[in-house]
Image 1 (cartoon, rainbow, N blue to C red):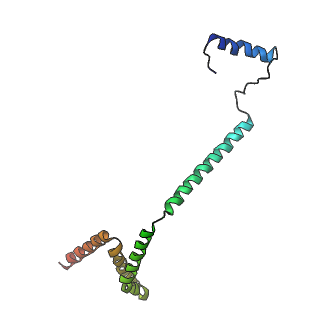
Image 2: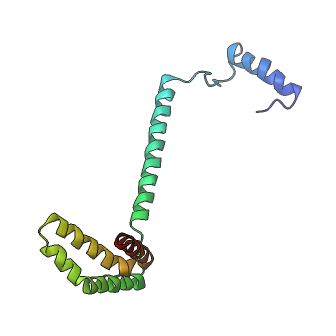
Length: 141
């Protein structure tokens, strides 16, 4: 409580100590100024609990980000896109499956990646193709 008046100051400084120590008319026992060892251990325990709560929350947020749900319409569009890639890039996939030499496998892998990129990320695909074409035309000159 605040010291709102001189009477409150007298009560705290004179009346209450007198009642506790001399008259023994109250069972009031003020809290100790320094924390006990039990209180200190409870503080450590509460800090550990708080840390575990924060870690659990972060883990749940990460899991939620990793498992975002998609709508049925988006799932159907994704399945159709994947089906189209499998159909259109079947020849490139067969080259990857049949390759034996390391250079042949590297070339087949690049061809398959470019084929898939043509459908899934056309902007990046066109940039790579343009860069490859300009590189090959510079080599011919």
